[in-house]
Amino acid sequence: MSKDPVYRVFGLGGAGGRIANAVARATAGRLPAYAVDCDTAALAELPACQPLRLDDLPATGAGGDAAKVTSAARAQSERFHRALEDVSMAVVVAGLGGGAGSGLLPVLLDVCSERNVRTMVFLVRPFAFEGTDRLRAAGSALSAVEDRGDLRIVVSNDELVADLPQGATVEEAFAAATRTLADGVSLFWRLGAHPAHLALDPGLLLSFAVTGRGHVDFASGVATGPDRLSLALGRVLEGRGLGLSRRAEGARAALVGVVGGRDLRLAEVGDAVRNVAAILPPGAPVHLSAVLEPEAEGTLGLVVLLFRRWATAEREEAIENAAAAAPADGSPAPRHLVDAYGRPMSGRFDGVAPSLGPNGENLDDPTYLRRNLHIDFD
Ligand SMILES: Nc1nc2c(ncn2[C@@H]2O[C@H](COP(=O)(O)OP(=O)(O)OP(=O)(O)O)[C@@H](O)[C@H]2O)c(=O)[nH]1
Ligand SMILES: [Mg+2]
Image (cartoon, rainbow, N blue to C red; front, side, top):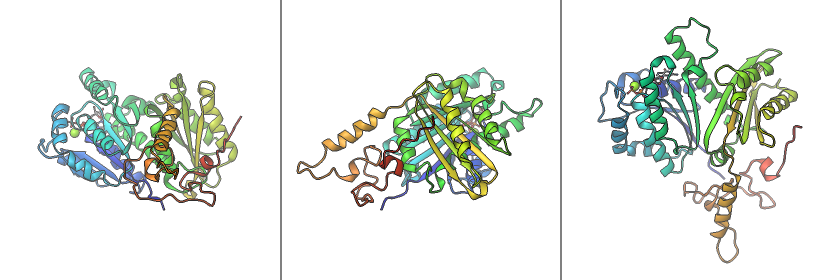
């Protein structure tokens, strides 16, 4: 019997909190979210989030002082430890360039790393109109977390609203940017929310976090109607803001996620994979995840991640290390030394026995990994 991995969203600072709140709402609370801030008024406006208020900082907000937030947060890191109990993957969201979000980021990511909690980190750069000081502060905040976190996705607010009509107000622009990112995160989560033949099994997602650790490009789109696949593909690959075909140089692998209803056609899934493969350097693997939701009938949601690093050797090394630690009498290495994907385990799952099949295979592994299936779309 294996324990299901637990996901939690952590929205840091004003922007992070608003995006986390939108994710919690879009997933009807099934992907629970914390909002972390010292700003009590900002936290009060996020009813879908569980607030995690920091002490020893002004209750009116950190006023852009990221360094002060970092040292105050380090002194109260016990709170993050508590919030991360039982969590196996944290989805962290923050707007860069202010005080709270930028200052909290390195502290939360360090605690996650200490606890062996995998992280998927969405960072938002300021709009160009916010001025050079903001952009510079955002740049420093980004450098501070360059080596932290597992999967790091950095987008700018300008990219998130590139499709907004001219003449939109500032308020509309912030709201649209929040919605675009929250929709992308929710769509991605839906890939693993239901058991399905090609679901993004949580263990598989954890394995992507090891193999593809580092900077990742991300785009998503939802469309309806007879041309829904071309519309979604157009947005994800050629969209003015986040279009991935301009970023595909040097990509090492891709994950294509398709969320549809029972009317989702095999040809649509095949075309999605083929079109993403076409923008990648030759030979780069494309992994597919596809799920059906009865309520998604008529729509097609597409999420694509491009990985810049693809360290399969690291996974193999983890398996070897586990084998080296195996008992001398030849009995198999204790299960807790390595997880289903070769990730060394910290003890979080100690004592949890794998579900074994009739031939001794580990049933916690997804079928296509167990059977070493290869889906060739060419
Ligand atoms: N998409 C989106 N971006 C936002 C929103 N609010 C702020 N931002 C962006 O995030 C950056 C950081 O702003 P906040 O998140 O408000 O700052 P903070 O982390 O709370 O830090 P303080 O300035 O100390 O309050 C801004 O420069 C904006 O670019 C929002 O509601 N949506
Ligand atoms: Mg704030």
